[in-house]
Length: 138
Image 1 (tube, rainbow, N blue to C red):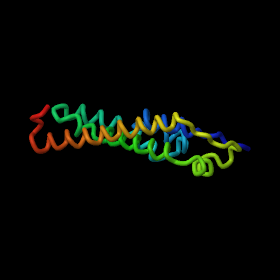
Image 2: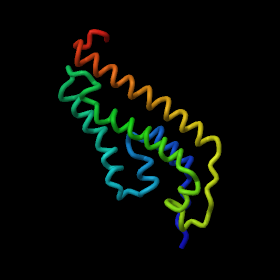
Image 3: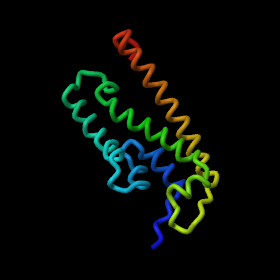
Image 4: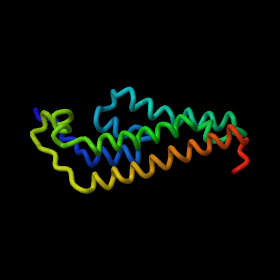
């Protein structure tokens, strides 16, 4: 019985745009993936922390979800840069089809790299601002 063919472009898209809630993990591994559920759990935990400590900076109380989003961006890079020759044996060995990724994957990788790097730099800058100046720059 053939298994469903997993499309690398769709997996990269899900990691880039819905990686914070683990959509790419569920697409690739199914609903038994523990790391996918860990991604999902970061959102309510962060919202609960924001509700409990509203006077604290949102970057600190919501840091679990921020980390989950940045991890999704990193996973989008890993998925998108995986060659089709390695992708098919890992995810499509029984599907009977060959992957043929095009330029869409490259555009998603560029998007993920840009947004992910900007997010990491912004989070670092804001963290240092809050820790060393008490948030005097915003």
